[in-house]
Length: 121
Image (cartoon, rainbow, N blue to C red; front, side, top):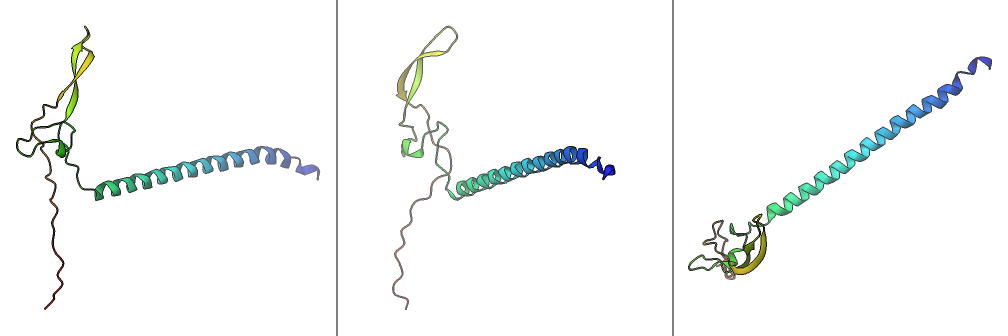
């Protein structure tokens, strides 16, 4: 029993190292789990975005519905700066019609109506 005095420091210091390694492993596992959850969330977001048709948005950031069919002119009202200070920062804004001329982008497909076939002779 007199020769077992070395067990006490081993238990005190050895258990601390084991605890540190266990804590580091747990933190690494938790970090990896969070990364996997974020990757799955990004994948779901990408899949939902891929299933949506493209938005017909003009370079002026307005929807195709804001552009006239005949002339392609944008009918949206925007706020444009009208008064600037000495540093060329806008101080005052006024409303005016968007001066974009034409929507350029994918043309949305029209709705197709097809009656059901009832007589199969």
